[in-house]
Image (cartoon, rainbow, N blue to C red):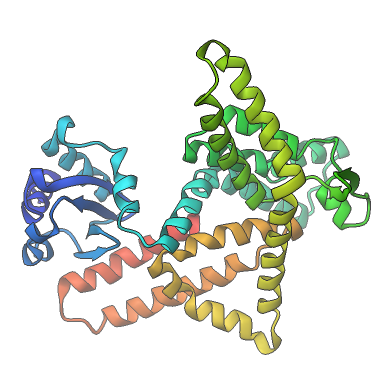
Length: 375
């Protein structure tokens, strides 16, 4: 069956072109939000040839198509819809409207962190190559090692900059101002957070209205950077609402930049940094429970958490672990959990009589495993 025919059958099963509100795809599935869910013909949707199944979740009608193949099907669907009936920018808004408050928070965090994945994955691969080569006996000169460290450490050292940028972009603020705020958060004028943690430097003590505040840099911090990007968007909109147009170019950035960094450094930043370190420490303590109980529990519930969509919150914890200790024990644990699910799916597939269900388990489970691990 051609992609064009698959797309036509999908459109027919959901009630036609006029019933499509918005659509997008993930790694393996075509996701569609409808104007009227009652017009869907579920039996027709499930019986489409050359796709592996259909289900409904979080306000989305999801057709399981497969990696690579789903992109072609989406493109054919867009041709059928036409430009006047398809607005890609609406899809996330339509999805958010159908999420619970908790899912909306987690989804927002995911939208901020996911764009960072290519940079962090690349940096991580370079770290692995450096470690492997050194284990194999390769000797680097001081200058060569310094250059290699620049490639591997920069993204993590300046991660608040990347997150502040992504956060401001998500909330509709000025990403460039957010970058400047992020750079200030890790500026050399503030004591390095890692050096303070190791006892190699002391916090910068200041007194504000009689209250003593210890300032340190925000290297490796996640929540303060997300807050900074959000605050940039809020202050910018508020200031722009009353500043005369002729002064907007100067006054709005000035108040946005100064107001954001002041609130981050002296009010919200220390609190959020304390909360972040507390959550990370709590996770480490849970994993270090006797007899491996913490690992057993997390490994058992990890895939259940994925079903709810709350697994995106692990991104903050993983980045926090890397920022504070340079080690991420959650990654191999979650990989093992997914590998176990993969093995169970293959075992069940050997017992199934339904060819479509068997195909879903045998073909899509390995693809899902690889996609999730790469993210």
